[in-house]
Image (cartoon, helix red, strand yellow):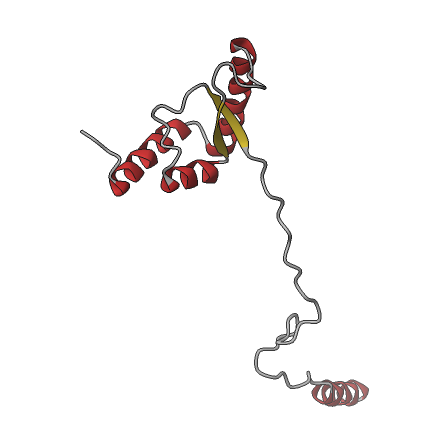
Length: 132
């Protein structure tokens, strides 16, 4: 008899202790109005890598499309003709360019030269600089 009475009391308390009615979009773990605010991160601008060249022959430096391609890849050509102030000798230029190409490799992947050549040719065709 006591067992029946306890089970009835237990059942009555369970029914009265029902969950609150949820509004549309709310669940027990999430709700429609979160208390937190997301903070957009300020990404650092990547440093541009300088690739030193002695002449601008074949570089298409005035072509905006090619300049955009190289800056998107993270480097720019720096022209330093012989005799110019700040000119690096051959060995210094070689070591600088070796390190620059290695950093470009890490940034853009192993086939970055092929990608650059393909995009440069596309830019040449679009702007009319392509002959042949």
